[in-house]
Length: 68
Image (cartoon, rainbow, N blue to C red; front, side, top):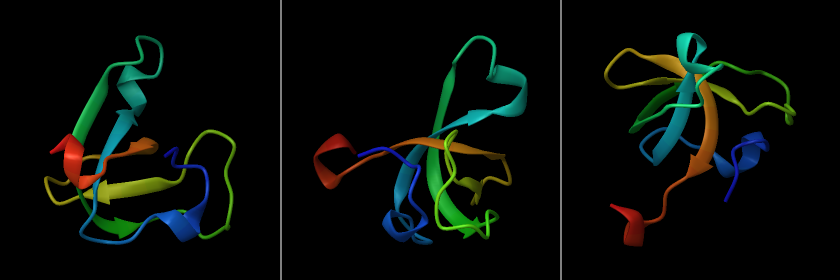
């Protein structure tokens, strides 16, 4: 599932994000959502979140329990 719709993202779920410095390379970082930073319901590049590790980026993929 992609991370363009805010309704699909909640604190506590595992996601893959792209950090600002990784946008050119597309390197993804996995982590648990701490809070959602984008206020709009949709963003074409992904909803911006803060992970529990403190990293901030846009959600590229929502990982299901089978992906853990």
